[in-house]
Length: 355
Ligand SMILES: *Cc1c(COP(=O)(O)O)cnc(C)c1O
Image (cartoon, rainbow, N blue to C red; front, side, top):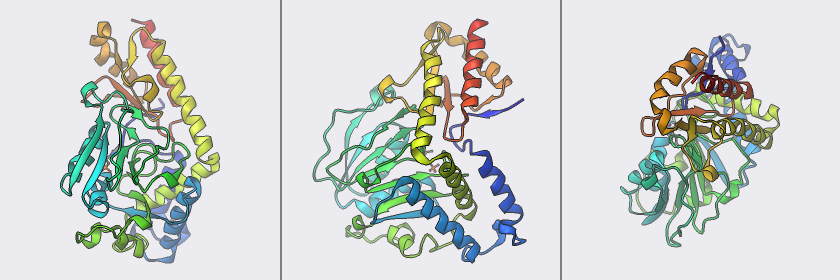
């Protein structure tokens, strides 16, 4: 039976990424050694680093003046690195979920934090739109895709102060106007590579303005000066990221990817909206095209464990919803084929017919 991986993260990767990574683990570039055992400063690995940076720049059309970094520590490390490097006195945060709340909490260690708006009162099922950003904030932080709640900001916002975005779970899902952002970061394990590497795209002119001393490893300038090789970078996930980006490029880049993603999400949301027993949890206008959250209507609620079992027996893996909202979550990242979404929809319809 074909197993479809709907897990929220670590999550599905393109088959070619997994195959090429396995090959590189056994015999990298035909040099007779594993990528796991060669120096990160060897010319073979340097070529991987260079190509990965180049593909980031090419696919995202990153303008001059920005640097692309590959760091450790996960997206969660960026929750403190961002304010450490960019907040002198005050920063603004939009609170759209668990990850946004965690980022906001860390920022409070460094100065005054203004929560411009929050959708916490309705279990983060929408993106607040009516708020103002203080003009004297050092930056404005958003989480573009709320992995747990299935909401997404799918356009590049205007901000009077530098816009900082956690894009862990929707980077490379659509074309971006990077020039609207001061810094974009994310963990790789949702849409790019195995866990272990964090990408940072930073506008260099924003750095070096805070007066506090910054520990060497937490200072973005250290990693810029050393081409992400101040210390040993996570070589294997960087290699996998390169293969994923080659795959994305071969598909036609981000405009082509976005078209496919919208189509896949449409198939699933249509099935939910036309169902007698399932209902979506996120407000329609803010629905994510990466994480689709749904539950059973109140009168069918007790069938949830049964559907969970029914779906997993048919090869649907990882559809259990996050504990904070329950129900189901189908993560349909870039690498999820349309056939996987169709298989899930067929499974939902079959279950509905038999109940
Ligand atoms: C998964 C996730 C994180 C946490 O990433 P780590 O790399 O595990 O620290 C942060 N933000 C968002 C939006 C996520 O989806």
